[in-house]
Length: 398
Image (tube, rainbow, N blue to C red; front, side, top):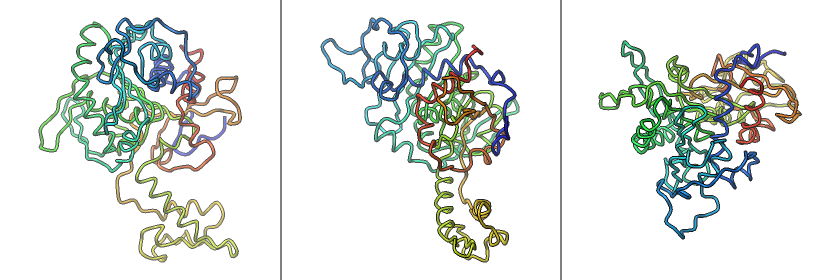
């Protein structure tokens, strides 16, 4: 089986994954947010076509489109969502909202998942300049959640742009979701997303499932306690201790595909990467000495760098750089119960006879606190890779 990477614990079998039926089901819901042409471009396989919705395509605010109005080809349509997600018919798509170039407002849809007996709020990943701005507003924003019956308050930080997006979606979706749940008695609520959508979904799930202490000291009450969130390719959105808060581990399941850079990238790790590059530029390969630049460590002088660093060469450079980097802002991580899925054979194609190994993240800092530069760091993030690896991992378990 081999030794688990740093901070990860290899599961004894894929059967130890939680809710494999829902993990496999909702990864397609997440992929469906990219629409017919987006999914085709990204290589997400479609399921059999379904009949068009009786309402016809839905407009930017979820309203039925007037007869004769022509929508762009990239517009989300209920029948495309249904065929990619595996819904029984297009009328199960209750609402579609396209992002109209508005910052902190990623595209999303709401669907009735009859097979899973759930109302699903599904949030799209980055598809526009406005979405990119939401990604890049990544400074830590204070967040305080109330957990447990004793009313204990846990303080931490969240990704500012995605927290703003989650708050905006909460305001816009609370009433439609209440109405959808009322119209489907016994259904649960799930929040789903990929990439930016996964980060926003995680924070929306945190806000909807827990009371929040606001800046003025007032308390915003949980709207939908008991919901579940499935986050695929999750960005770094919460600091410790919020990221691994037991209450959020009961609410959010995050899935990371191999070396996906998005689940390791943030303001803190990007600064670490800069520091590492500056440090490595100081390596004198001719003499084998390692000179860790003061700029790399942000400590003021070379003498203040840990003494052990000066004697390190070769592979020891990495440990030296780790010891030299000083962080002055909270590090953010994916939220909730986090799993990393890896191919046993890195050279093969997932889903074609190649095994998948599952790892639980026991130490977020060790497992996801560094940005690894490797050939698969970008390709691992694509939604079709998530569909393939999650379906391969859950095959035979559902």
